[in-house]
Length: 423
Image: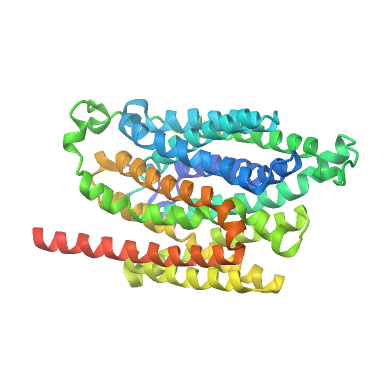
């Protein structure tokens, strides 16, 4: 399509950004503030306030990964039929409903079902986002585009985490909630419930920018019928390329759902302080991947990922061993910030390794692997916490971050060898 921009405007355009990308970034801004910021940081606190222990919470945190795994592959098979844009909107609305449902009950069964539904919607959402995003810019701008998206997403989660730490205090004052049972007003279930419902509303509104995106013409790839699809997919290659996400999920499941409880357990911090610390970590998760184009140019995507995962693992070891709060915060920021360079580098690597018609299925297989790893580790957190303690769990996470980098390197070497053989 012919550009309507003047030559001067085109020369000064920021790589990876255009009107369509900016609209999508508006969606991601609201989505991440609400879902992975406010709602995520408050969920564990809400569950504790209504009487659930660490073992039950780890079970509830693992359920979304189970449903995400179950929905991942079927969604990848039918996403071309549904349309990626439409599926993003539907799954976002479903996530808003599941977040609201969790906050409106104290029933373990209802919370478990809402968490299961949360995982199914989140899985569907994540399957199609990367394939949809690569249609918004030329292939040469994908790494820059994913880095910008990561920056906005992580800044949003940082802001949402800080907001989530303070929102129960605001709600307790606005609703005149009294202290009871040894809990401060901001630690009462009603304060958490009102805060999570606010997050659900913002999450629902985040679907609006996606509706403003231009509809893309239905090409031959989307028109392909599903019958016979399995015969055309290079399954062995897809499974091999996506496998590093399984290892990535294991290290994530032991850490991200529980960082709020980890800081409360190790350093006895208040909710608002924990929200600030976690928000600071997410801030660096947004900033550090901006250097991805620099590392990619010098080491290649796979080489950069291997090196960065190794450095992240060292930081996880430091976090696990740190006794002083300030030192733990520094290592925490380094560990998760450097680890998060994975997605903005790996997703373009995965997409570039396959034909466009296989992007959705590769994304769904990758998500299934990631959910499998996350489910297993999140489910085992409660048992490991009682058996070996939090510090040992951080050392285990560090080991799997190293394995993540090695898996990517081995995959890249096999791909290079196969390409050379074909030549």
